[in-house]
Length: 349
Image (cartoon, rainbow, N blue to C red):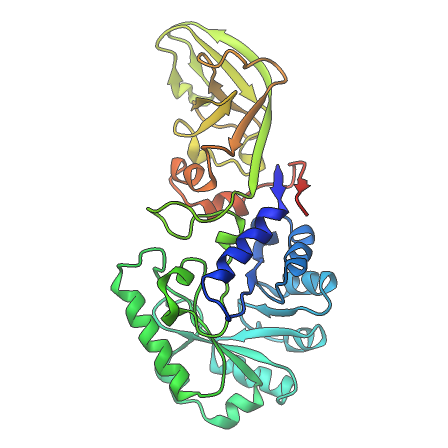
């Protein structure tokens, strides 16, 4: 697995350029989307990023050790009893309920900042808009709220009317709680225009090469390249089956290669029969059921497929979005599922 840190930094700068003058954060949860927090976060810091978002307290503690001076926010809220740990590590919890506000207020007493998450349609975390609008000034001050946030439901579909409604609701919230900066735009939200930009952009997926504008050319540079060695090549005759339960049967003589990776490495079993690998640039279909540690591909049309040769699972024409689509999922899941057995090689940083 090759991770291009230079591309991550370039993507951050590209996203920043969509909203000149608006600071751009970086969402680096899930081990920087599977790319390795320990290498990605310092690279982004060197590029100029000063604000970071993670999902969990443990991720925040790890990031604090890497970047002592960074602003770090913890998206998944304040779990009971975790307030002192957040305060001690200077982590900003993203509060999403009155209970969290009250608990953090007892810990913070206005000395430690927090963000307020208002739900404008996702129905996961966050106060509902009427609850947030009813908050009194003392409750906001006691909790040290210095950022208002919401999360877009369908930013990758600009035509979806929910975007305009959420943008309007967030504007209402900003007007009701003046003087507190706001953050609305995720990766795709950045491309919805200036009304979505507010005071802090917070991209994640696009930093790692995912397309924030589906249906249009990807403005991001690719970050991840995934390769596996061919462990063995064999020829099968017509009528022979491949893999567990004989899910694929050769219609004629075919040349097959077994690749040394499988679903234990995060290559999705759901790509069985639909995925592709590239051998010498030749697309080679995945055959049968993907195993825990092996994938079989048809290399009949790839004369360069020999034992020890390299097959590409992510890279070139197989970008992360294409790989996700072939598995019936999204590129986010592909990236964050990449396993610990890969040898990670970093370039460009």
